[in-house]
Length: 124
Length: 279
Image (cartoon, each protein chain N blue to C red):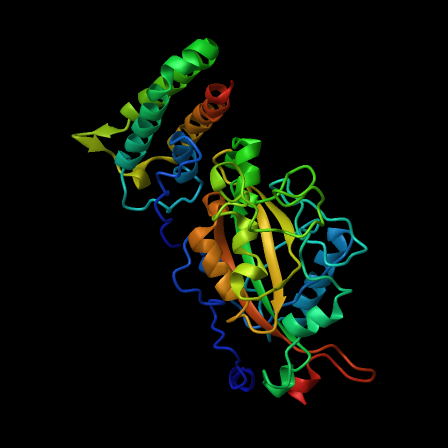
């Protein structure tokens, strides 16, 4: 199978966190052959930065959503940290299926609250 | 198969239609190409599967099944007698499809003519099959406004953005706030429109599919896209090239299978299928 194209970044209509969910962990077993989890980490950081930029607005309008976001980002951080190796991460292809599933579930768990951010901050 | 090989048309290859620069393709060779294609349709999948099973049985020793796809529902209306069905993204699909009643348009866009050649295919057509995985869960997380912007139609009514009714003509030139086109430059219906493609149209006749889950908690589901056209090089290929490079929907799609087949004309009284080719 061919490589998936890298997720397109910088679309103006949706939060960067969206890219995390579409671009990674799609069930294509070898879609990320020979890559490590650096990209994954970078995507999480990008999403986090996008959310952080909106933090005051989210806090003011939906404090519960913000704490859910923080919790889910935290869970993903913890999971990712388990796969650190030296200065970086283990190869994606070396991850046992169960751990890929855990990452996928954590991304889904984060994707849900992230998807609500745009609606919350655009409320009049 | 040398007899058939000599009659290859349109540069068809085992890998299906070659689409240069098609992003979003993640083709699985095990779901691509093939020499012969059989489509069985029935109201109950048991009947269709039974037909395929028996045809494969008859063929053992001569042919072997390379790949198959079970679909359900219908993703495009193909007649004015049908109400427009919804695809797995929840949108009405096929509103602007070629319809069985438009025999003039079918002649223009679907049936191969004498001047197109080859002679044995006159009155026949070309089938393009694409297995398109749809990332349903990601789509469901996308806001309604964003979904409608991606498609270019309202989700409830099916009306083109800027219009009221499903069958109101698409107007790609309506502008909204700040002079921005209501149907965005990267909206699916804009890029797939005949207006954007120099008049090219195809007859879509696809199905939904669900092949269980992907092992990571997501549906392995999507659209088994089937279309018929007179010349895939000037109809399907330019359309797919525009969609694969510009369509906002591509973010939610992945093309995982592809094939291209020539379909001989229908059978005449006393004739047999493929007669024009084999006689």
